[in-house]
Image (cartoon, rainbow, N blue to C red; front, side, top):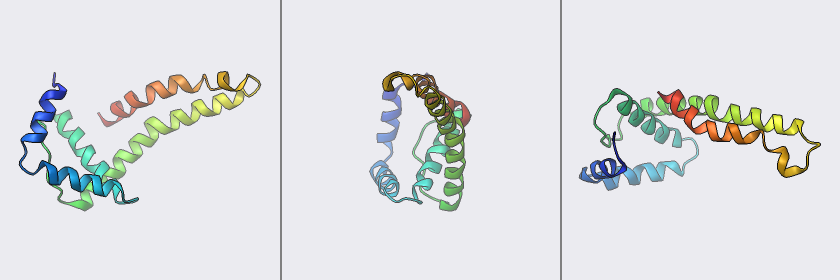
Length: 122
């Protein structure tokens, strides 16, 4: 099993790690272009799925990164946001319960949305 220490050692062993992370950080600030960063993350997840060694790839083929970012967004939306929306709508059916308790149906969906996104990526 890969540990956090092993991943950080591999990230910082890349001679251009600072530039690659800086590019990703700047792109995350731009509204539509941040899909490119999601595509980068999607590719990193695919590398992990295939069992390849973890390394920071270069920022190349931006069109393919954008398309991969759209894939990641659709997976995240379907596996994460829609279940949260269902939980929220269930909580609105319980409007007659005092306010804090009416949000109880959201909690299971909130807990499961992260692992569901990971399962969707896999």
